[in-house]
Image 1 (cartoon, one colour):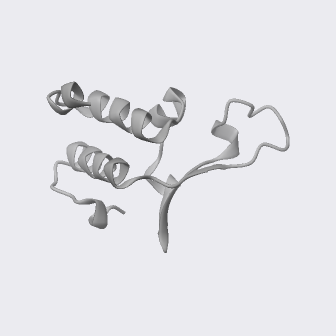
Image 2 (cartoon, rainbow, N blue to C red; image 1 turned 30 degrees about the vertical axis):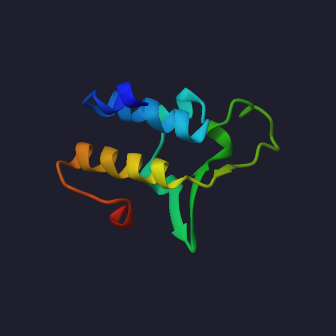
Length: 92
């Protein structure tokens, strides 16, 4: 993690998010801001169709409660992608 802190770019932030959330790499690469909700508690919800077993009819969404470090990483990724300075509290 210390080495990742010294690397600029979205790739390093994506790897950091993957480590902090234990999501699959494809779920991180294809993530959408709409998957992040702040309804009382922050929740990162991966839709069932993005899951590994997406061919099964009964695949349900995977909900991940992101840690503070994961939210900070998402804030950095949002800021990098949009050329702004954003904190975790200001995420869409």
